[in-house]
Structures are given as C-alpha cells and as structure tokens.
Image (cartoon, rainbow, N blue to C red; front, side):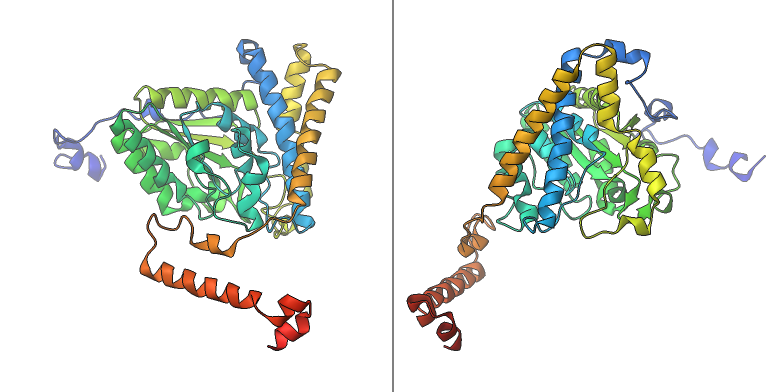
Length: 389
C-alpha cells in the first residue's frame, strides 16, 4: 500500500460539492493520428468537398512558392512558408461559416487567402506596409500574429463575448507547436474550458519551433493530450490528410456552435521549407528527413484518392494548375508595383481618439514632411544641394 492509498490520504477524502468531476477517458485523443485518405472512411467523403480541397491545395502550393520567390526578389521582407502544411491551412478556412472568426499566426497567410482574403492584402504586413493590410472585421480574419500564441486569448475573448451577446459565432485559433510552450496557450485553454467558449484550438505540429524539435518542448505523448488537463477533448489527426483534417475540424466547430465548449486539435504535419527566408534549416535537420515527408505530400495524397475514385483526370489536374498560375501571375504583377505610402498613416487606427502625445508626434512629422518638400533639392532637381542644406 502506497502512502497515497493509506487511510487518511486525500484519496479517501470526499471532494467538495463544487469540485467538478469529469471522466478523462472521453477527452483523450486516439493513440494514432486519424486518417481518411487511403482508408475505408474515404468512400463516405463528399466528392465535391474533396475536389474543392484539391483545387485549394494546388492553389495554396503555388501561392507559397510565389511568395517565397517574392522574398528573394526583395518584394517581401520575410515570408514564413506553409509548404507541406497546405491541408491544415485550407481545411481551417473551409470549415468556417461566413460569420465565424479565424485567428491566424504569422505562418497562416494561406488560411486567410483560402478564406477569401486578397493575396496581396494577406502579404501586406510581411511587406512592411501599413498596419494589418486588411480590415479584420470585414473578413472575419484577425490580424496575422507574430508574437507566439497571443492570438489565442483574443480568440477566447471574442468567442465568449459572442456567446454572451447571443451571436452564433465560433472562433478557430491557429497556432504552431512552438506556441504551445507559451503561457498564453495555457491561459487560453483554461479560460475557454471554464467558460465553455465556442472556440477551437488548432495546433499545426510541423516538427520544429524554428530549430527546436518537439521532443525538446514537451514530454507529453502528444500535444493533443494536453487537452485533458483543461477538461476539453483532444483530437489527433494526420495534418497532411486534407479530408481527415476537414472532418475533425468540422466536428469540433459543430460541437462548439452547439454549446459543447472548446476542442484542442493537433495536426501532425511537417514544415518542408525553412522557418523563414532568414533561416538555414540544414543546420538542424537532414535532407533525408525532409524527403521522407515529401513522400507524404498532402497534394499527392488527395490526388491519388481522387484519381482512384475517377473523380479527377489529367484535364482536371491541368485546370487546377492553370487556375493556380493565374493567381500567381496576378500576385506577382501587383506585388511588383511599388506601393504609394503616406507616412501620416502611422497614426491611423492606433486609438479611436488620438492621445495628446500622438497628436504632438503627428504634428512633428507633418512639419518635417513639409520642410522636406521645401528643400531646394526637391524644387530644382538638385538632390546634392538639398542634402547640403
């Protein structure tokens, strides 16, 4: 008999009436990631949904390659590619209703584009222009979040507020495996579970937090297992299986909308490209590891399923690729145009009513801009004379 099992230990003390008692078994994720493609479950999948997922995956892959190319051309300051994770991005966008909200991280521009956001607007922040680059309220897409996991409490707050107002709204919050090591992650899950907020937490476990592998971040069996500690279900899914990701997220969104509370979904996927264009991924992982994951490419998996079921042929594949190329050409052309910037927009949308300090700073900048326009070098085309003054 152990100390904890002896009479008088806390195991023999009845819990207070206010202490919740939840059976943890239904909250635990499966031992293996859930899959649809290549299994018997695939036969029950909606053919039209599978074809739509395929078209968005092909478009998403081309979007990633084009955005990466734009960084090399100096048109983007930075781009965190989601190549290899397109199934997660696309499924996250397609499960939401128009009234729902998406809370993306910095790597989730593709999810915003798949939700209907203009690709140029989605990249504006990464270009270094303006504030967010788009109107979050119009698109129901929160600002792309660079600080890790800080978007998660925001998602909980919005979802909880919507429920208090009687609005039928669900918030879907995306985060990487690195974000699960942040305090914001744990605070958000705890508040969401206590309030039973209609929010879904979607962890894209792509193997690395920059160069830190998952094994150095957690000793848990999976990130989905963390859900039970907060009293919510955890689901584990193959993040490269677009049909499986869509199904699991759809179930979680429906559960949240029906008042069932939050769900933590972990998608096991892989970041094929480097963390960003400033990262050298060869320093912390092998080419063999990357190639092994290329064999589990989300586009190949879905294309194989569709062709086997005679839902996709060469003509359909070509049509999807051509549509993706048109999107890339439009993105390339518009991103190659230098934006017209107004420095005074620095003070727009900071506060609903500008503070005295902001008004003072705006006046100072306005005076400096006016003085610059009056320089002789600006008037007569002699930049050297203007600089000397």
